[in-house]
Length: 165
Image (cartoon, rainbow, N blue to C red; front, side):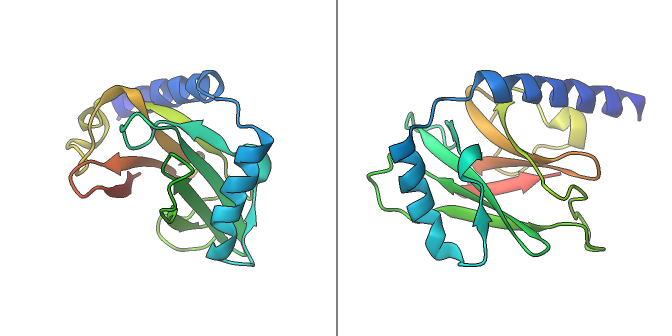
């Protein structure tokens, strides 16, 4: 138990440090394009345009983008695989906030952090999540914190966004 807590603390510390060092500058034109791509996902979702992050999500060498938004008691995440000129739909997921649902986020304003995938999740989970590939160059997106923390990653087997908590 103590080992898991220490590993979680170390992972959270590394993720926080990476969130600031991996933060690639996202210019205003890119912000507008990202917002234009996520607006059709729902008029009620309030997307946080100030918190758009650039990252290498699916390990293809192209810059990808992540943005979070909220509507009622749901937090939404959208990942747009680059390049932005490609018109693929964003990868999306939503998570409960402050409800009795299993895995609900307790933060009123959940935060997204770009995290490193240079770790072995077997140490935390006892098994590897499907399609998780440890990488020194690719990123995951970490969501939440106090009650539950989601690690959102590119599932290389299913070729889609997946997560573990």
